[in-house]
Length: 243
Image (tube, rainbow, N blue to C red):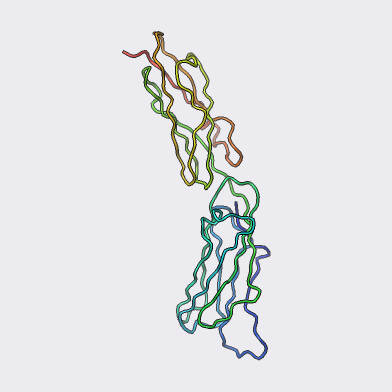
């Protein structure tokens, strides 16, 4: 998801007829777009230096976006020190697996010390999709005695706020399906980048070594295959007869 402020609008306080020059007025602006996972940088300015400590509250209204799309942040407090006339504040966005655009509205809710807020102070921001994480797996150890287990680890290139399911494809080379337990997928929790699952092996009377491979299956929408393709090579697992 990425965030874009429609039209790169600049919201500013209108000057009333007869208002004396030098009276503080606040305005703010934001960029037209920002890629998912990056911050929305909001710029605020006073037309004259702050007459003291001035506080401005920027509210984030979620239109089609969800609260998690802005990392659960719904407002930001900006502090102008005396004699300051410009400040910036960052509204974070969090990556997820959604593929549709989402919008938020930034609104200057209040300003302290009698500084008038803009009457037309809302800016709409569109959140557009960034590059989803890639998923890879690794297996340790690569050789065990029958009755022991392999640990399969799924790794994401970066965390997202969604649940991620990495499917596994197990293919027999010399092993049989009865030689090990099945593992269909690995579940990675929101905001994590790794998770594991164990594949247990079974004892039998076969005296020969047995092998199978573990690979990443068809990925869910929003995930991408690792690059280079070599990273997708199936992991070879060998079972030895226990001594």
